[in-house]
Length: 410
Image (tube, rainbow, N blue to C red; front, side, top):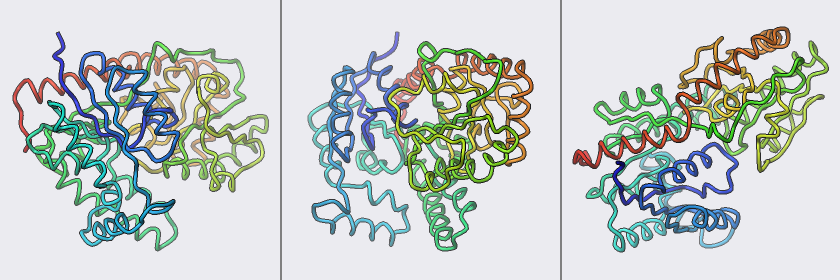
């Protein structure tokens, strides 16, 4: 029988409405864990949509939700306190985001909740919220890191041609590497998205308790569609708030799509949730650009191939798992499928250059059997290893290891 714990979750934003992979993950983990545990959520909100989303979250799940307004530099209020924190962070050589997100209002809310309610464990989603847990060393705390930021910034720097931008990205990468090295050893467990990320965490902090807590999908809701005789529609889904998605969209439009469109002028490419000036500036004939959609299943049902042309970032890609669950063959860069238990050629096709994308898509156009085989094996993989219920079980095992065995913070 699963033990019941009193958990405090610290979130950077509301999981609802769901329009990014991070929000989806937060919602699904809370949905599953709230069935067995007493959960309190403390979350920042930046706008009315997020504040309303937190109210909706409390209404949907049997949890307590407390909303904390995020203090902005622009848009009203006194900009001096947060600007001072940003400068102080810069001088301390910590990552800029750590200073921006370290706000007195959240510290006060954490203090209030802890004074009012006994808490067995604090779970921090994203490392820039770590300071709120570290000031309470008497309570076991877990960090779940969706990205390894030092790696993500380093990869972005390698793609940047502007010298000033490259210098700043490299500076942030080094700042995160120092911070990660210091941070990981202060948590009883670090939740990583993949074995690749877990190994980096152990390299940063030898002895850190890195636990793989993958991304997932709801395989009972996301079910396969048909594999049509002819390929017509290609699809790329990504949030515009995540810089690697913007880079991927622009690379796809400027370097890959012109070659594809020349060879196969009847193909159509759809970009979803990528309404952004940088992407719009790269638009090409045969491309449809859509904004945020409330439900991605219909657009996946129309897609014959899902593209994941990512050249930067870290963690793992929910968009790949969603395509797998829905039976849509995937062509992805190595960075795109990094960390997932996939075999290129069995679960997806791998391509890291425009000619390779053209070659792999040509293969799928000419061989329907290959598309059917990829879709079948990919679906089997997500059912076997990446359903949200299984990811929740991994959380349960981590809690039992940390709390039932009497582990304490380092």
